[in-house]
Image: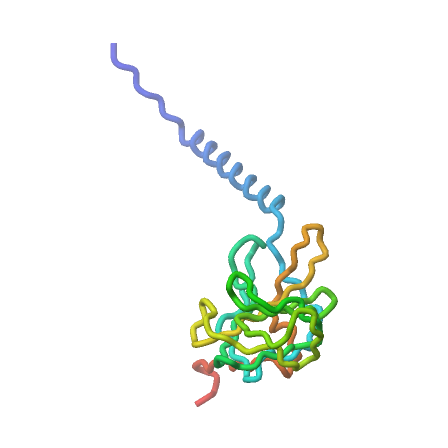
Length: 198
């Protein structure tokens, strides 16, 4: 008597098993896409009439890069390169919500109404909490020491909009999107071969 030979699945059975497994993976992926909450969307700016907070031309060192979800890391503002001790101005009227250290960093926060707040750091404040400010009022002076700044000093400028949700969280928005058209930083398009330049 000879030893029994192992049976192997026919090509048709193997194809059926692969098709079934592929269909199960596709169904699971579809269910995840349908049932997963959408990623955090950046809301539209509530206004577009702010002035730049610097007394020098704005140069973006690090752009706004919001996280995909509230709890993930990201860059929730813009870093504007400027010389140390540059005067920081209120980009719109409002009330100083806070002027002091947060985690060892000097911060100013201004409430502009309608749920909009802007923040500035590292800035030595020349205003006090509760003070009213109008567009262009000096609120402080830029200091060195902003982590991640590729030059001597950067102003980290942030903007938050009250979400109105039950969680009490605010939505971060790009502060540059709040600027009046004539106050936005100039961005030159690089020339490429075939542009007819040079």
